[in-house]
Length: 114
Image (tube, rainbow, N blue to C red; front, side, top):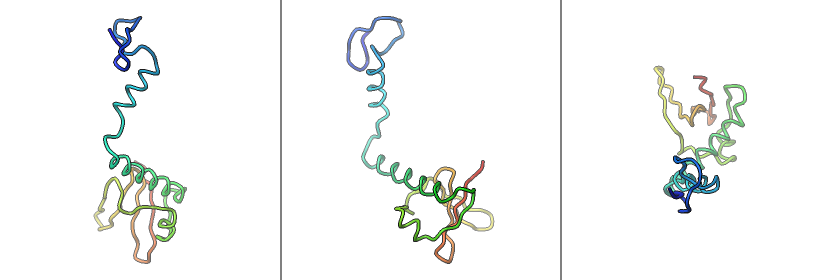
């Protein structure tokens, strides 16, 4: 059997696929690489938004000015899901952190405990 990454002959167990850890890591990194710049850019924006919400919301619930989020580079166009509650409240979530735009140019940030 030959290494899936470099093609070298493999010594050892019969079910081995790689000759060493470096080849295994290189192969898996290629397989798991984002397929396009678009995906990578979207994931970076989601990560940045998530970090910003985490920094501001340390107690499970926080209220902040929208301008503060803007100044930190938060991008309101990127979120992972939208939840509309029975009372009509609309929250945009980035994984387990959600935010609701309030009337007075403030933003309510919550953490989903489930």
